[in-house]
Length: 407
Image (cartoon, helix red, strand yellow):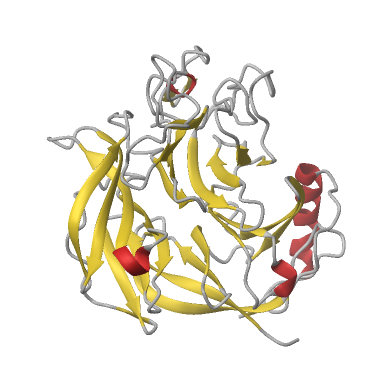
């Protein structure tokens, strides 16, 4: 598949094959309404979407090893290795037990910054209690040697236990100082088919005595850094870095500024791209841009409130935003500094190229429109963009990559 992405107005994305201009008009109107005629970002690139590997079931995360291998987590609880472009038939042994229900299971995989010397990897997952009736977000580290895990050790268990099958968060990112950040979702607290619990201020995401709806900051062994924002505040979990979140499905550091960004699911509207600040409250569910499921009624007390952060960008209706990567490769020079996020929503299914000016979003361009339900996005060491696609029914899906092409 060949695609051309050029964006003279910051509103449309045109495919070179199997995409007709008639599709672009309503899409442009939608983006104009949501992006409010933002100025254009950098010019696009011509690329091909090429299958890298097939046969994965609900791939959730990808990590590149120094030897050229790729690690991939499957939500059902398996860690897989792709070697020389082939998916090895046997999963990696030694993975922690997971609660593979609904949105939960084996989730993120990230290498330690010094992986080449210590061989450590980190896995996040939906952790079950003894009888499997409850789950929370867990974090383990292990040593990867000879295609198996050894010295597996759980280093963090979120105080976010619930019987619900979703909103685990579970994305991991290391900063350039070696601190580990991980998202913990709100665990669907207060949610019913009739709407949210009306006690918005009493929601667990607004209560820092637990980890629900937070991003935590840890040392690489799971201990608490002494300069975390709430480390000396009585009654507050010392691991918390930011709070007031819902279900953060991506964490990524900007390669130049070092800023931490998060992509977060909203309910039936109000998906967010957030610049994460230490100690900040991101407002869920008191403020936001979403609506109650099924009934469509208002959730939030308001769109904004003092001492609660506004998103850098939001989407209405929801796109099911998942995965976030800042492009810093050489294969696509015009994409350097852009962010890429995926869409899981059945009505959205696309990649979004996000142009930034400093900490301000100036444009959002849709790519791969209607082609893939996207779970994760990563930049490979070869400068290509790798995308994990996800089949909602658990059928085998693929990892694709974007490769530059001539006109």
